[in-house]
Length: 636
Image (tube, rainbow, N blue to C red; front, side, top):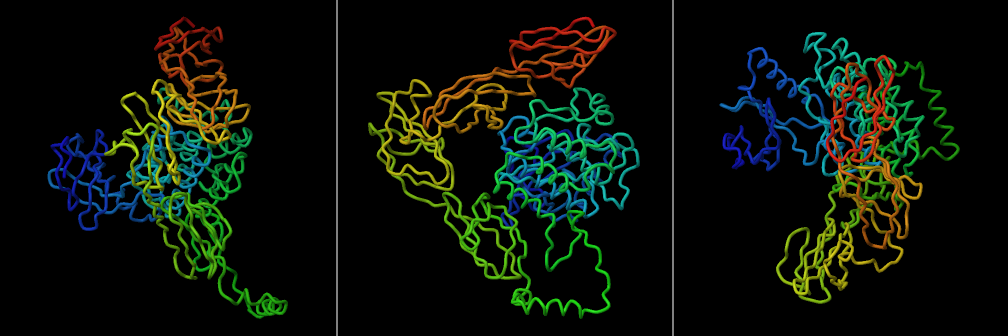
C-alpha cells in the first residue's frame, strides 16, 4: 500500500505496489515498491514533469530517463544497479524500476560514519573500479562518478548507480562544450571543454578514492569557482597527518598520477590505479590483501581458459595469435613433457579455472581441500573434484565439490538457532533483547539467532539494578548467571570479563570522528558512538582530525571486558572575512580550503590560530577561542 504520509502517490505504479518513499528532490523522487509477480523489492524513480518549466528542459530530462534505461541495458555487473523496467504512469509521468539496494550512500558514510577500516575502504574502491572498467569496456562513460552515486549495501559491497548523463563513446548525446556532472569530481578536460572519455571517469574515481581514504577532498573550496580553479591548475592537497596504513610518498605518487591534468598521463584503467594504491599500502594483512586483490582479479588479469574477453580491463585485451605454419613443434614439446611424467596433467583437461566464490552473508572463511584460502567474496582457481567448505561464525557450515564446467553457486549460510537460558542474580529481572522487551522474567529461555549480533539488557526495578552486554555473531549466554548491579553509571552497568586478559574497548563521544593512535600505534578512525578494541591496562592516546583541525593527547585505563569513553569537543562554524584584501585561510598552519571572503568551515571548539595569506603585506594571524559559532573579521 502507499505510504500514508504521501497522499498524492498512487498505490500502484505500473504493476508495482508502492510501499514507502525512499527519497525526494526538486526533479523527482524514489519510492520502494514490490513486484507482486515475483515478490521482488524494487526502487522506482519518478520524474516530476510539472517541476520542469520549459519544453526543452522537459525533453532533456525525458532523454536522461531513456538514456539511463538504455545504458543500463548494456551493462551486467554486480557492482552496477540493474534497471528492470521502464514505463509511464498516467498522471505521474515516466518511471524507472531498478534494483533496490538496502544500505547507505557512500557520501553519507564518508561524512558521518560508520567509520570504515582500511580493508573496508579498499574493498569498496576495488568493487567500484571493477564496475567502472566494465562500463568502459562497453564503451560507456558515466560522467558523474561521485560518492553520492554509490550505494554501499548491508554486506559492504558498493553499487554504482545513476547513468542518467552517461555517454556512449560512439554516440553524441550532448553538444561538445556542455558541462555535465558534479564540479568537485569533474576532470580538468570536463571543466575546460566539456568533452570526456573513460579517462575523465578515472580522474573522478581518483577524487572519490582520495576522499574515501582520507576524509578530505583533493581540491577543497567553499565556492564553485575556487574548486574548479584548483582542479584545473593545482596539484592535490597534501594530507596531514598522512593516511593511516599508506606510505606518504606512495600516496603522493599514486594520486599525482591518477589526478594528472593531462588524460594521457593517468592510469589506463581504474583497476590499474587500485593496484597502484595497494602497492603503497603497508598495514594490510596477507589474507586481507589477497581478498582485496581477489576483487581486482575480477577484471581478468588471470586468463579464463574457455573465454577470451576484452571486458573490464586493458590487461585482458588479447591480441590475435599469429598463424602457425605447423603444429608439429608443439606436439613434439607435449610428447617430451609426457616422457618425463607430466603428460597426464596436460591431457587431463583444463585446470585451475578462476571463479568467484561468494556467500551470503559475506566474510565467510573458505577452505579448499581442508586448506584455508581466504574469505568471501574470493576469486579462486578451482579444478575438477576440489572440495570447498564454507564457514562463518554463528552459521551452519556448507560443503561443496566443484565439477568442471558448472558455475559455483552463491552459498547461502543458515544461522544457528538455539534456545538459551538467561538467568540473573537476583532473579526476577525483565529481559530486553535487541531493544525489544520479552515476556517473562529471569530465569527464562529465549530463542537465540547466532548469526546476528545481539544486545542483552536485564533490568530489576526494586532495587534498581541492571546488566547490559553486547554479543557478537556466534556468541551465546552459555548458561551464565548475570550479576545485576546498581544502574548509577555506565561503568557499573558493565560486567568485567571472566578472563583478565580479555580486551576492553574505547568508545568515542563528541561531535566528529578522529584518528586514534594508542601507545604510538595507529588504530584507524573512530566515529562518535563507535568502539575500538584495546588490551586491558593504561594507554596513552593521541587523537587527531585534520578535517576539523583537532589534536589532543589523553591517558586512559582499560578494564578487561569493559568500555572506556573518551570525549572530543563539539564543532563550531568559523567564518573568516578580511577587508579590503582577501587571501587563503590557514587554521593552525593547515590549508583550510577557503578564501577570506566570508566563507565558513567546521572547526573543533577550542583555541586556534587563523592565518590569512594575501594582500600587499603578505599575511596576518589571529588567535581565536571557539566556544560556539564565530565570525572572524579583520583588515588585511
